[in-house]
Length: 631
Ligand SMILES: Cc1ncc(C[n+]2csc(CCOP(=O)(O)OP(=O)(O)O)c2C)c(N)n1
Image (cartoon, rainbow, N blue to C red; front, side, top):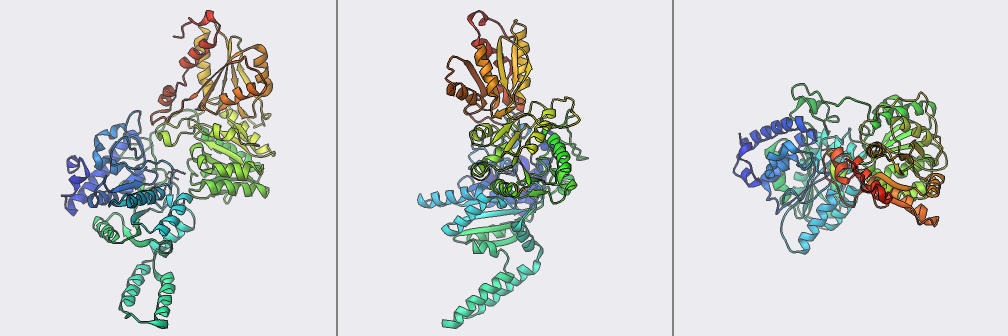
């Protein structure tokens, strides 16, 4: 096994081309085996085996800087930089991170998780290099999906302007997570499919090289002819117009060709775009056949490709999906908008049922938000389905375009709360603080899947402005589902457990944690009231005033950043009403980033457990209860 001999990139340098090719096979086998147990981003990594090998073979990491867009395709890089022995822990608690992670290795120079940041990082690093008078290579690897993101295009614009030496490797596998969309995608397709492009380009270059240096008018005409011919026949002209030298397309599974292309790129004294064609899932049949499903996969059986799924109640995403279809049957103004996540957001069935009413805009959250505003302006009912973490990208559009104009956009905010193995780049823990202070917006979270359905009805019946429903990346609780969906009165909370000793105000899955705390305290003779704060905004003011009148002790429990969340809203409410004698304790996510692991472990580390809530409630109690045990 060659693989066993590779501890760091320099171990590759002595290998022959044939050995590198065998190594590529061993790497694939390793990934297929390891990920069958842990799950992870299999298809993207199988696609970049040769590309990553070529980079480490030719360059000198960490002196030369490798920047991986999103970072989900960095497993091969991790293997070649001394982390092979940690793959059994991939994406698990305290284990190897599924993205680039600086604390893991000096070879990890730039972290991500969100898409389309690599080119900004690359130009920043190239600029710093030049200003510091250093001399190393900067190589960014960006997928054709990530290239559709606005940030990447902003950076490309600047890279061409700066003209600094750097290499952008465009890893083109024709896929985002789902099939890629848009004009850039179509353009890349043209380059890929038209072999005459390359031939004509070579011939043209040959001819132009033979035109002698001629002066005056004739030279200008020759230049113009060259320019117009370039439009017709030179592939990559779009990138050339941006100011980058375009090289390619190159077969990204041919090590020899990759080496030649990189050596050519090194000779260009300015920014280069190296267009590399790869096959997502390469070398594992199920992943090649369906790279959408195998983009990020749960554990599976290697021989059959059967994915091992937990049985239990449906995920919230699925419940959302079915409710939306039901509602769209009754109202043809409903359209669904997704920024490149039709599968993850549960919109595939919707698209099949209502062709033309599901709009995938590519990785373009900002555009999706503003476009939804315009759809609403024209009387449609856009449902902008987006993961909480990616909605961060569209904050200004939410404020400026949707809420300020008070438009009827429905936000379906998935992955709200901890997300487990994707970790700190993907948690949906900031949307409560960054949404609840925006005027006009209503923000809801259901306690179970049945309530989610009613909230979907609430959202789509509401015509007073923007309204959002957030739901977690977990299964529902298994409750019975009501036959019909009915709107919930805006701003009303619900007491789900009566009690006199103290009160827990909780949202979403935290209601189950509240129940655990209440059960623990029941043993000690305390009766805890639990309130389902299903509207995070507006608050149920009459219920809050009632708590004040009773002189209650209140714990507010939320799976979101503790600062600026629902608890803060409750404190602000009492402060604004000059109610200063309420005992309120907020339990939310502390002011730190919480790493990958299971959702259970993340909640435990953040202190979102029944024991902790019970202990905090005890602290609020009059003295005689303080010694009560919660064990
Ligand atoms: C801002 C943002 N939106 C959405 C995503 C979810 N996402 C992760 S990878 C990916 C597709 C990337 O496609 P591409 O760049 O072509 O890489 P590939 O996986 O095909 O190699 C998407 C949409 C993200 N990470 N960041």
